[in-house]
Image (cartoon, rainbow, N blue to C red; front, side):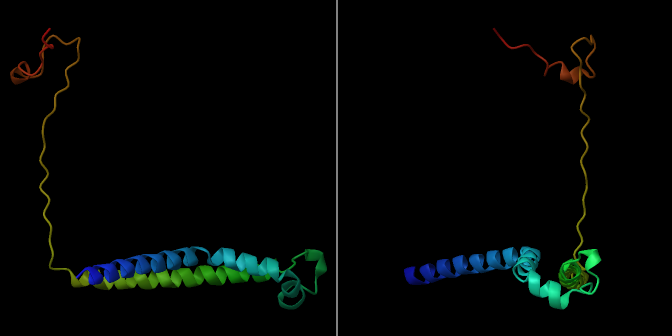
Amino acid sequence: MENAEYICTILKKALSILLAVLIISQMMVNVGIGVYYHLNKEYITNQLCINKNNPALHCNGHCYLAKQLKKAEEGEKQSSQSFKEKDEIFSNEMHDVSVAYYPSYRIICFVSYTSSQPCADNYNSLIKPPAA
C-alpha cells in the first residue's frame, strides 16, 4: 500500500512539473521568436527581409520579426478560440442545472455619537459603555 502512495506522489509531481513547463513554454513563444531573430539577424536581413532591396528603410529584418510575432499571436488566438468553443459546448450540455439565489437583507443603523436618539429601541441594549 505504501508503494502505491509513493508512485501516486511521484506521478502528481511529474504531472505538475509537466503542466508548469507547458504553461511557461506557451508564455515564452514571443521570447523564443525574438531570440531566434537576434541569433540569425544577418541571415534574416540578407535572405528573408522583404525590404532588402531598399536599404534606405533600415528594416534589417524587422518586417520578418513582425510577421512571425503576428503569426504566433494568431495561433494563440485560434487556440484560445477553440478552448472557448469547447467551454461553450460543455456549458450547453449542463443546461439542466439551475441555481436560485435568495438574498437576505438586514437593516443596519449607524448611530453617530452626537445623536441623542438611537434609530431603534432594541439597539439601546446593545450600546453600553464598558464596565469599569
